[in-house]
Image (cartoon, rainbow, N blue to C red; front, top):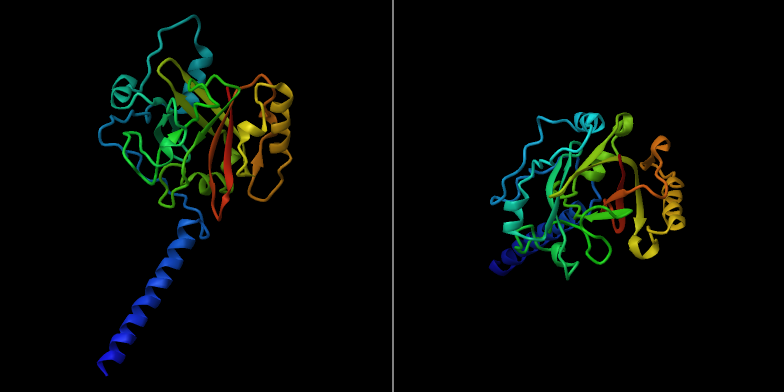
Length: 264
């Protein structure tokens, strides 16, 4: 009798565990509805997070257009303190929607480090946002700069990017990405969202080559899949600088979800 009860209890426990693991697998791999809630961005206790609430991106664009002559660059991000904590920090990304405010890293020798290490160099499944030293300069002056980040199911890193960018009406107003560096502020306007396979874009296209650059843009604008969008009125062309935010596609980790923006 006791053995039968024990077996029944074990069977129930194993059944519940199997259900739990299955649900977690589907949730973690994005087979449920993509999250539209960004996780708190004060991820790093040792960092002083810059405050951008008082300066809307649209105001920054107006101020930049109105500037005459050269003025001393005053960065709202304390890069001296950040780089003292980790010299691999090369920039800071700020978006209003989805809300993202995080450091950008580039390791000078190993492009895989920040897949599973945070901006303080500690092991973390979330990793950090990073650019690859093998393909980008780290100062965001290349024709195409790609920032990689994990699609975390809790909304951290690039976790809420797809859910928010694919919402109805997202492109009813201009959407911008701001990149702060130690020497300048760069503003990009989002012009497309799309998906691609796991092939490395920097190996597939030579963005320094005008023909390759335009071929890539043509490919983006030929994507008419449901849920993906491109804006005709700000279509980039060779000579422009573009920024790509790259993460796993919800529901298919073998595909990439891309947010593309052009420097304004």
